[in-house]
Amino acid sequence: MKNYLSFVFEAFWNTLKGLWLTLKVLFLPAITVQYPTEKIVPYPRFRGMPAYDSEACIACGMCVRACPSRCIALANAVSSEGKRMPKIAWYTLDYGRCNFCGLCEESCPTKPKAVWHSLDYEAVFGTREEMVRRWKRGDDLWGTAHNSADAQFAAVTDQIHIQDVPVRK
Amino acid sequence: MTEETIKTKFSEPIFNRSHGRLLMPETRYWPTRMWKSPWRLPTYRRGAAVMAGILSGGAAAAWLLGEAGPRVAPLYSLAERYALQQGVPLFLVATVWTLIKAAVLLAVPLVNALFAVWWERKISAHMQSRMGPMYVGWWHGALQTVADGIKLFIKEDIVPECADKFVHLLAPVVVIIPAIVAFAPIPFGRELVYADLDIGTVYVFAVSGVSVMGIIMAGWSSGNKFSLLGGLRSAAQLVSYELPRTFSVIPVIMLAGTLNLSAIAGLQAGYWGGLLPRWFIFYPVVGQVAFAVFLIASVAETNRIPFDIPEAESELVAGFNTEYSGMKFALFFLSEFAYVLLSCLLMAAFFFGGGQPPLPFLGFLPSWAWFLAKTLTLIFCFLWFRWTFPRFRVDRLMNFNWKFLLPVSLLNIAAAGVLIWLLS
Image (tube, rainbow over all chains, first blue to last red; front, top):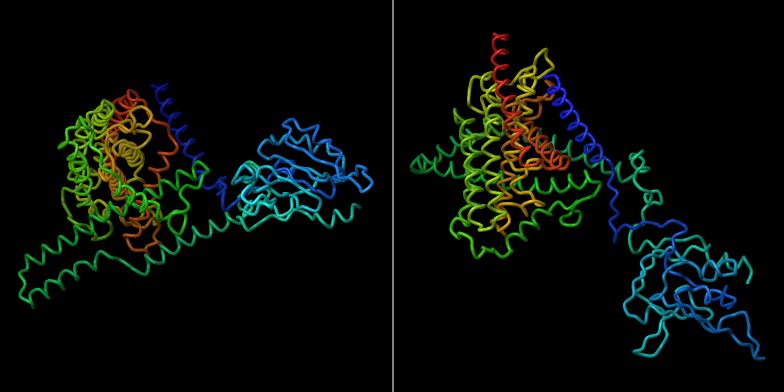
């Protein structure tokens, strides 16, 4: 009888404990992020979409060698005397093949980095061509993409960026 | 290129606000940090202010509207006098009056379902730290149920090939009609009752028992083994939980000495020592035990978790609802919420003093507002149980009923006898 009563009491008590837990959580703020209207700011070391600064780059080719997906290619600028200069003639990065490992950023010798991962995680591409970006000197951080319809390179306009200017490391 | 030029070119990150609101940096940590001091979050403070506003606004509206019950009878006599002047026969006036009252009563379970579904989704979401519906309607998905209702209306009505077509059609009707008819003797406040039956308690239990028939019919006529299992389990469960549910009310009836629901609610007016209300739940031991048994049995009667064996999704693919779609399914759903409301109204009348205010100085609010507040609190308890407890196993469900609830409710009747003997 005593065992039975203590069993009943314990069951009742545990029931109340469970109820208390859910009641507590009910009055705590929800952790949901309402994504399209609310966005989380990533951690500072988050590896988002790679950005490239054509002015800071010295065209050493370290990132080309470091890239395991072989998505980077570049060409040196050549001076009027036919000498290679520490500047790029062009630089391409295939976002479709990039695996966001960060080795290009790690190997980049300039300070600040010429190629680095921004915090941008909303990389959306309308076409395959938009994934392959090309930079010439003076281009902005996101480069230009080839458009086969008019055979022109142009900046990708409808790209959403969380940041107007990505973080430099 | 020097360091300075680079620094001027690249400033600190400026977050692009044109594509949405970026959350504060601290919200990206897992909520343990956020939950330690939720009052620091401005959104939390705003939400609390809105809730307080809704509560006080509802109370103010109730205070302005005042008592509704005593205004009904003068309205009827006014209509009667007008009919006498125009030469309209009085029985016609009475018929129209009854029809109007019936329409109002019919609206009660419908509006309740509209509200309760939304509430259930919001409360379940917040108990799981989610937000629930947020987009439909202007405020926190307030019109989500309307959208769901429209969806159910335009859905195809599928009747299975091997179903018993007539019984399949009849089953939702048999479930929903008792659920609506059972509201007749329920008081919604002082003098606010459709039919003030002297035998109201028995009527409610008897009529709501008929719904079991509809559930068995649904299970049988679907021609589906899962539906049949669900229907049979439901029959076993509902019939057996009806016993402790009825027995737990007997102490209340013994103490009140009447079966009339509004009389039972009215008897609980007044306060012990000017502070503790004379509600039946505050009668020592007997009241609390009766309430606990009635609450548990009511949750079981309404087929809700943790007693939702008949419509268990994981075991029975939703049991007797499986082969129903569109409005037929909606009728089952409606009857479930109607029964939840009915149980909560009964509990408010039996154990929480109906429209009596909990403290003497709160008497400025009308009785229907207190009745509504108590009923909504009890409905919240139903939702709270649903999102806290896991489902019972079938055999344990029956064990719990026959070996625990029934003996306890019988003992409680004896205890009520002792209490009455002590009080007299």
